Image (tube, rainbow, N blue to C red; front, side, top):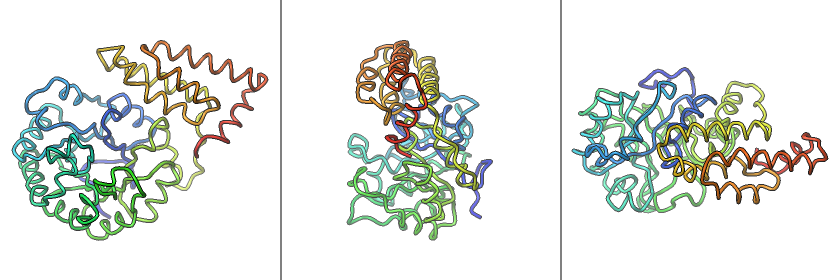
Length: 345
């Protein structure tokens, strides 16, 4: 068995993927409580860290209930990446440092960061080695299958990362130029699993617990990294664990319970962010995800996407539940039946 370089109480660990603007501390804490075994911060600029940029440093905050946690950094300057890794190690002491070689966003890759590094595998190795020299923590990597179709070679990229000293590798099997279009080629995850001696995490196109289990069965990946499948449904981790361990998957939360979880998440976000109005505006996307698939969700999302304080959300949810009861003739079960018909499973 390929062993992880830090303690994880699960044979097949479930990771919350690093996602800018999403995998902030409140969501990480929520996902840990709903069964995520490992979480990773949003990807953070090495230059921002080494220059002590307040906005960047604030995103490095995490609590004890988020461990085990990795801090993901990005950049194309090995010296800067090494310095950032050293600072994160000394000041924040996560379980591991993760290097982002996968982000496809233009403003990142135009500076050769993220998946931009994949155009130069010598640079990839140099960055990994510089980070390893600067920390005693395990160093892991997240990659894509290549820059474009002509340069698509996930096995070679993965081997270069392992040769440079990476201890765990996560693969999102799309190229940078694909962004999020087309289908993730899970067979490339299987090929990388076969080629490496270190643990490989599978990532990409996991929308349901069943998808996660199918990825594991088809690829033999050592762990599963869930990204967009967690949006508005942090319980996907517990449900996936049920299936991995041969139990019937627990049902989705009721509408009332879904709203309760969303409100709890909202209050955590409000406590975390010093700017309450900014926190409410930033949280609108989460609210949209939590209500996706509910009967009448278009109008509900319209109201939620206009909130400027999180205090408004509770009233909107109460209005919806009153209206749902009236719509169902006072029978909540009828509303639940309609939810099951329209929501993804």
